Image (cartoon, rainbow, N blue to C red):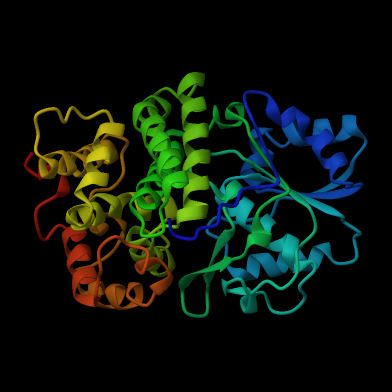
Length: 395
């Protein structure tokens, strides 16, 4: 058995209504004055009260900053950090989607690691643990509440960059499906498929292990059976609960086994074309799976089974190909674009995108099949529509 680490938050609270415990959890951490970090949408929907009311009951003093922007640049971090200076906060709470949670994680360590936040980019560049913080996701997709990485846009070169450190794991993560009931279909789709990307990539990753494999397969099962329902009938609480747990499990698997080429190819789309992270990942997933499938037929056959595909009587290769076709159908069913043309990419952009993606060794080295610039460019061309769609894979 190869050496591996398994990391999760200090505490995990799950279940319908669990957010009501946040005041008590903040007090357990010794917090007396916390900053609640969110965005304008959470303010407008009224979800913020799900956090502030329990804080009031527990007697925890708090302020609110609702200035996180989607796909946040480093400047957004710096602007919020400047407003926090000298305010005496001894804890942070992030409530929102992945952008809010990533911002909260890094703000917590910025409080104890002064200097240019860009110096923290990379693996384990954070020298000191941050202040205690609690994360409360309001979408089912990013898994940021249980991972130790955070992604930001560097506006200097328009590339997505990651900060990776165990200190980015929260003291407490609270996953409450009730907070996702009003998420619109387009966001439910993009974040739900993003969670599925996390599960599939971590399950087939080089760094996967027996712990992460079982977790990832259960995530694939939950998301595959409930994503369509959650998108088209958002008040279906059972579907929302499946998605919340599926996203959580996928995040745990991602956080410990890592991801691969889907994410590597998605980052340039996000940086150069402002494609939301979940959409970029979801769009590329079937095309990267089609490339990867021959590297681990057994695992891709298991993905097909977890997605509910009938593989009885099929050869191993046919069963593995079923996973690729099923993923493309699911993506189409929930409204994910089928071509990178749909998000503004032209054929002339592809060589530069491939060159940029080929530099992301941290992810590419974890992919089950080796890629060079040539193979990456070919995948982009397939995603552009120059060759056969993964949905047409013969089975």
